[in-house]
Amino acid sequence: MTAAAVVAGCATAPTTVTTTALAFRPVQAYFSISGRLAAKNGEDALSGKFAWQHAPASDRWDFYSPLGQLVARLTRNGETATLVTSNGEQIVEPVETLIARVLGVAVPVASLPRWVQGGVVAREDVREQDAVGRPLRIADDGWQVRYLAYASDAPDARPRSIEVSRGEARLKLIVDQWQ
Image 1: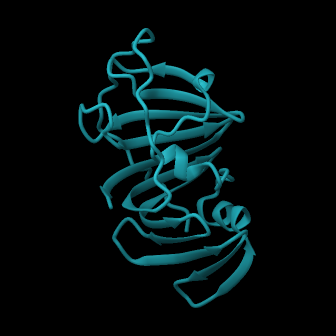
Image 2: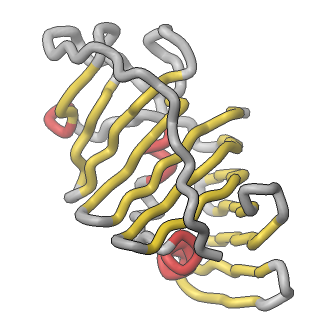
């Protein structure tokens, strides 16, 4: 499942401004996104495509190879998740354990829905913001979340390129489609 190539983002960094009021960023309880991902933890790296359907009590992640073949499907109901691999192997474990197994990076699954939407828990978590008040970098429970690009220049535009890191662990998502 590990691949040598890592998806690279092609976005220019917006100008950092810290005097603008922080734009209100509502976090949707339900969403569906798809795009590309790259995960790296030390020397281990992988890349591919993903589709994610999120609801408050459930999630479904489909992980694809860079060429588009389904590699694994992870479904979550509450705290328990089931991973089904392309060869039919089925594993039932806590969702955080399975995400770490698939990505090689142990990211906090409960924070991901907010992070991919550019949501901020507290104003003091925002380390940088752009000229229209969108977060560019936040700190959250030891994790750094960087917003490398947004879908448009509008203050309420959704993030297009997100990088989450802590130590050597790094996850980059490029969102191609929001629903």
